[in-house]
Image 1 (cartoon, rainbow, N blue to C red):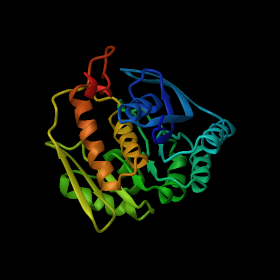
Image 2 (cartoon, rainbow, N blue to C red):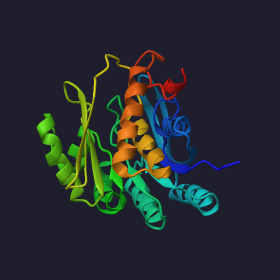
Image 3 (tube, helix red, strand yellow):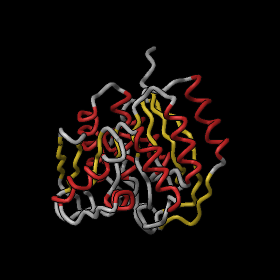
Image 4 (cartoon, one colour):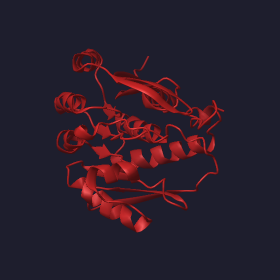
Length: 262
């Protein structure tokens, strides 16, 4: 029996199941990849927002990572909520010794506007983690947080990508989902550009879109795809998941990670 490609998510837990570790593992499974996890933080979270968050000790994060990577091995790693400077720096140290592509989703705020990254961790994110990224996938709030570049229109995406690339990721994927009009993202390594466009679906149940896109990119890289191919496939997957998003609880429901199986 053949072993599927393996991808590791290093991120926070979403108790509501819409984002974080839970979204990452669902996405990886849906795309034919064996997902593994390193939990960096636990959140009390539902469709209305984040009611509490508790980061795990650095030693617990390091032990989880070494346990998985040293025995099972990985073909790609995706990072999400890292919460604090010590966690960002620990994860960067671990990734530096791992021969696998890395997708960095620099999670700064939740879908509901709750802060998930300490202000003091931004410099560590810029100087320690982004230089290790094969692909970095910030949304517009996160790229502004990291670079100071505010994207008001599609024409600003290139400027934001250039600013992010200054910190060292091989590719920048700037997600323009918060802009008006069609959902447009820009992938670039500073010379090659790929503009990804999709229709905007009239569905407010979009919890977990960022986690889902980043983990879908990681799944593609684990399967041996080149970055542009992996991102194009991830965009198609997340667009379908958004279209199929469903109500859950009293607030914003999740995207549907299993939409291809319905």
